[in-house]
Length: 141
Image (cartoon, rainbow, N blue to C red; front, side, top):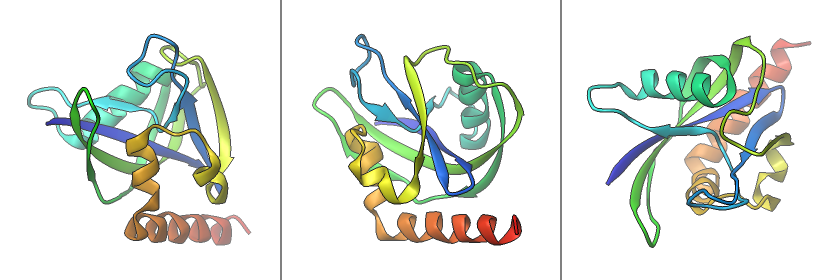
């Protein structure tokens, strides 16, 4: 099993999605950016490194969500999700072909990779995401 982190980078009630290119394991699908944990690396250090490498962004981890295990035909992963906010940098796509900000209520309508789609359908994760979004919207008033 491969341990993989992903970031649900939030801006208000929207989350950042990145699109894979044609050469990836999941061509043209959208995903929450992130990547594989290196030997000896913590989950938190991994997601910060991956987001900086992929998007030139510095992030602050706000909350950890429930991890899932997902079996693809070519591999099995443990996807470890974090709700994050941007703390620095300017968004630049170093590995993906496109990005977009999507309202959390519309995530289920996106062409997400299988593991990412499962991740947001777990009731516990849906609840964590809605609670975090509600708190952020209340704090911005």
